[in-house]
Image 1 (tube, chains in turn orange, purple):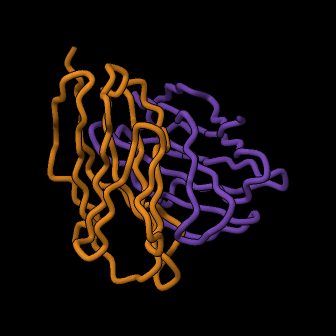
Image 2 (tube, chains in turn orange, green):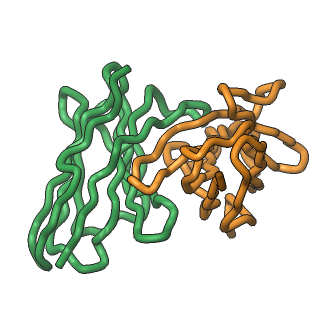
Length: 117
Length: 114
């Protein structure tokens, strides 16, 4: 079964507007970490933001914020004031805690974001 | 800030040849992870090392092997290359093996098998 679901294969957003990229996850482990990575067309994988399963507050990093709804198992990425350089593939990922193999990060299928001038 | 270094950045090999990919983690990171990303796909975990010992293994073919050295750098050795091995290979490093540790990725090595 898919552990990470990203239901939006592709999205468009107008420059300077905000956009939300959806992510839902599936785990029975009480301890886990959720990550968002950005992959531009050049290929590198850039870490954006992290949310721990026990964190009480939503994570924020500059223009990125993570809307964490634990009961719904959702971890949506919000990008405020979109810029042309935000055009990229965005991956939601999870790393589970002690009850399972806890080393690997499991990636979702990704959402391709295009920012329109 | 120092990042993960991977070499080479691009590699072209023929079928049945051997390739070695190198990864230098961020200083003071003791854990290294290898991922394979095929065209249009999400990265898939191959193998990881913590303090020079293999800590986890994913969908890594038997033709591939890896190790972490005393200076914490890691090498992924790939033999009898096949066309399907063409992919972007990422190395990531981190400071531990709990679920809350962030993995920082290198720029990747793009391997093309002809």
